[in-house]
Image 1 (tube, rainbow, N blue to C red):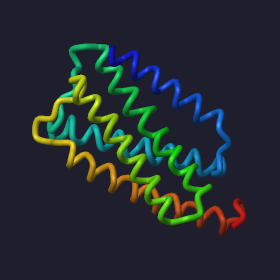
Image 2 (cartoon, one colour):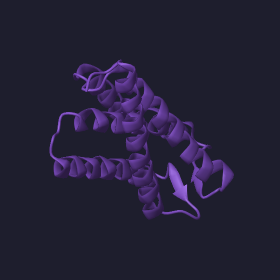
Image 3 (cartoon, one colour):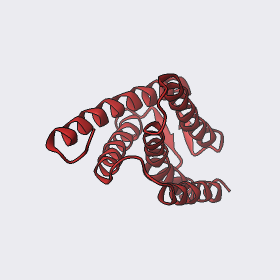
Length: 159
């Protein structure tokens, strides 16, 4: 059941992402996607494989595919959509509110995976995940701003 929900959510997010007009350049979108993909897969592999803080239901193929879709497509596209939406908004307060809304969406998706027993915490909890997702979001924001400055300095983007 959770596989079909994840496939539907992923399909909806992918279609929405590719249909909407992007506010960032293609270089920024590709860079952000690669940074997010690297960060998210490293984060989950660290808490799963290295430290054994989380168990992923690998015995059930549907649950494994559900987690892989969440890790590789759903979460990076969710954050990438956030960065594209932040370019439109001018008020800092609205940007912070939007960031926390997307952060709560990401935490909610992870909570759904925990409730569906796709992810099982052994030495971890949703609070730790929230902190790590917030730190990753802020870190990705600073990396994006640095990359944007390089693109402006090189003349690829206009201010």
